[in-house]
Length: 209
Image (cartoon, rainbow, N blue to C red; front, side):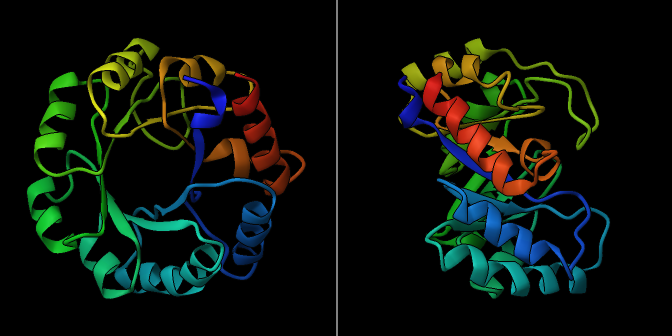
């Protein structure tokens, strides 16, 4: 797969500074191509998630970027988001599909071909494999191999997202293996020169892969 067939998928950091993060999000999205943003806030109350949606959704959608919510299809529908992403321990994909209607649904499949096939049957719009590399944002080990991306992309038309410790220095093998999207957190939000520089670095690496 050519590098320009793969796009960046931004995931928000685990904790958000509401006073500063909206501006950082705008700068990141204005720095280069981003396909989607997923709001992923763990261990916070619904009011905090709603506040984050209200602050970030207009910034994201006004730039023709999809705005998805992690774990909460109900809030995605309620607040005019473009879809939701569910994990294996969240709401079951079939229930999420019913709630979301025609909105986008992504499903975490770890490193399991069986889970990915099931997600497709359950109505997923994309499947996500990972972690491919060690990551600070999620517990667990890096147990996914690039081969699973190649297997899926050759077998299925459903888009595939790679996630887990991905950065500009290690992403080429995932692009070459067939990833349609690279989901990143630290590579952008933790970039030493700021989020905009992180987006530019990732898109350059994708293009060169």
